[in-house]
Length: 223
Image (cartoon, rainbow, N blue to C red; front, side, top):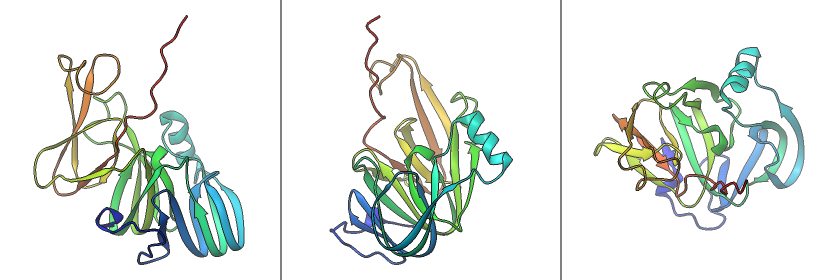
């Protein structure tokens, strides 16, 4: 699996294949066929393109999205030319999968090759303990573009026991074993929230991509 984490992110950098970073906030896709992208993410394009709503891919996936809240609204872009996409000026991180899998928080998906297989799955080992943790799984060979709040860090889980805040973990290798660590005593010190800290624990050969945020802060109610 290749990732732009190991590449220079200079403006206009051309990566192998048809996904490239125009800059750290904008993805440039050399389109010659079709691609799946987050609805509303198009900021510009050059050439001839058509934009269509992408359905859930069958009743099974539709029900999974409805029941779990996981996934992201997608559009299918067809045509030829240059497509530029972005989302709220978030940082963009690229992966090139080579007959392998990636489990992703659906809210962080920006675009991916249409021939990749996608599904919504419970995170094995963490689903029940985390109150029902579901992610989107992408498998096959092709490009995936994710967004993160701030510049992320990619951790090699094969080097040491690895833990990440459940709201900060964006994506990880599907081959990792995932568990949950809960602590009440450290609730006021680790992360934000209701006094309970929950960390995902990863074991095995693979990586975890962690963003520099736990998501937007919810303002306290005044009533």
